[in-house]
Amino acid sequence: MTLKLISSALVLFAAFMSIKHGWQGLTMKPGATGPEAELFGKLNLSPTTLKVISLLTLLSGILILMPQTFVAGNILNAALIFFLMVMFFYVREFKTALIEIPFLLIPLALIYLKYPLG
Image (tube, rainbow, N blue to C red; front, side, top):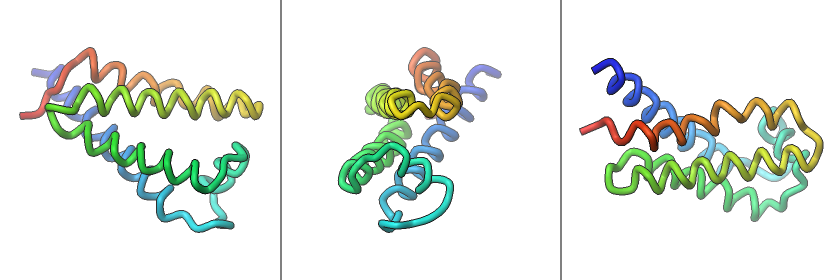
């Protein structure tokens, strides 16, 4: 029972964060300021690439909430986080890349724990 509660909380947290970050990226204006804009500015990705990443992040958050697409959503989420970690290492933002490790472990743990809701 306790494991199911922890797993449920992780599912809701992962979905919320994915939807929040995806929406934030989609609504970010060119030349925006703030910590997210500054962070993505360091990656030197095109605005189109950032929109695609944001759309995929939003999609992964939605997929995580449905039992039929739970594993696919978590795999997509883990892949996006891993991609960002690699990009941060590429531009020598080691601290930022290492901060992402716990967020990479969450979707992997959720796949292991299976879908708890419903």
